[in-house]
Image (cartoon, rainbow, N blue to C red; front, side, top):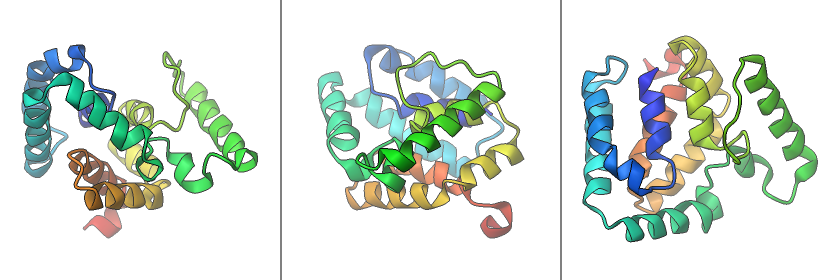
Length: 174
């Protein structure tokens, strides 16, 4: 589903290529049928913020937000196990990596398999129900991460809100 590819791209470290591709991403979003009007508006506002920012400042903000603040880590198992509990985190990362392999996904990144943009790339390959079920396994972590970003008034918070809302089982979301 296209919405997950867009979210994945926007949650990556901002570089010149991303900024240069914002008009194309916006066009894909406008044409997307798998995002509702509220999601599209949140993404438009985020892309406007990104497009109007100074690249060096955007990069510094990203590092401060996601790399220097553990409560905002995009590595989801960090929120469950922390960095110090390799005994539990390691097997979870291995299991996730094996799941990707089962689906024929070959990682072309140096990121761990629990990195949210990588997870969103994977979810983009699934149908809507499979994606919602897969993400629902991480609903507690996504809720904590979304709340932390909202408290920090991060411009990335609306992106996580979209992911979290899509992770909510349909029976609860209705």
